[in-house]
Length: 360
Image (cartoon, rainbow, N blue to C red; front, side, top):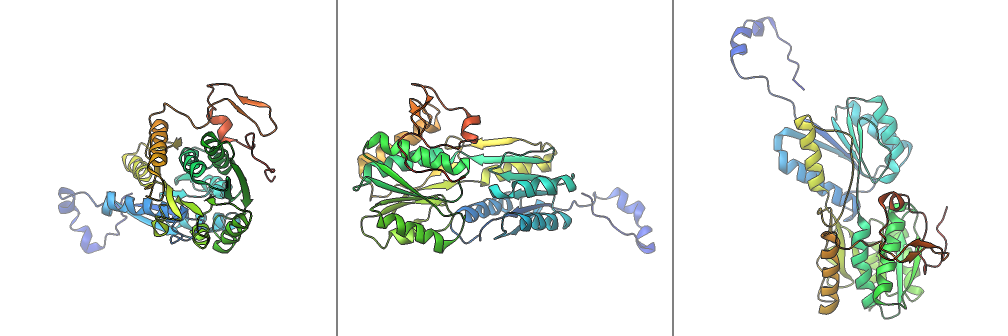
């Protein structure tokens, strides 16, 4: 976008000279980010903001980034997006599932602004979607959990019962039970992405039930902090490495690596090649990274987990490979059959062996 320069009568006399000089400088591309939590959560929003910083480092003065943190899903998100678009953002990343309708609504009013919505499924000519295959990382964490539990009880703190979270619960359980047929999994729904008090309460409730491994699909470090209070309980970093809790209770982590995607999409806007796309990348593409597996994990278990991650990365293994049944025992995937993306993207059922109902 060219800077609009108001020529005064004096400056107008220099037009002939300026025509022979360098072209007017372009304004930087303005890139906005909307976060559901604070950037200091050391989880989901923190990791998206690391992606924003990667954009700044990559493009320098070619871009200007802005962000709003702790924006609730719903009407507040629509107001925040409208404000950002009106203030001149050229590209806006909306980084939570619950921003989906707000993104679509605001995009319709600002057709010249490009939007990218994380983990959603609604697109438009100026709205792209992107996600990561977190369930791949959950398979690796589930393997470690199944090997290391002494009580055979694994706990899982879910945020909201959306497909992305249900995929993770199922993948964790499938792979924990593959290495330990006696494993059970208990799920507590927090109904929040970021609320340290609620997350700590959920972890405490699970530990009181005899759980000695805790996984979470929420954003704060509170579950790990609660696990640290009980000797013998282990957990995993969620979205970022959460290394402050290593070597135990945090024995490994799932790291969301958004920087490469953000850089690619900003470059596309700068090049004029941006189009509405749907991207779902995993371990092989570098979007999901397995954090350091600490020495609290036995060497043979670490080797097993790393081998599984490598097989997922090179596509020789898919975490949802049959035979698998649904929770009620009806067949889902036959021997060797792999789940298709459409089913995974709409997953609303538990696999066989998980007790309890998915809230509606």
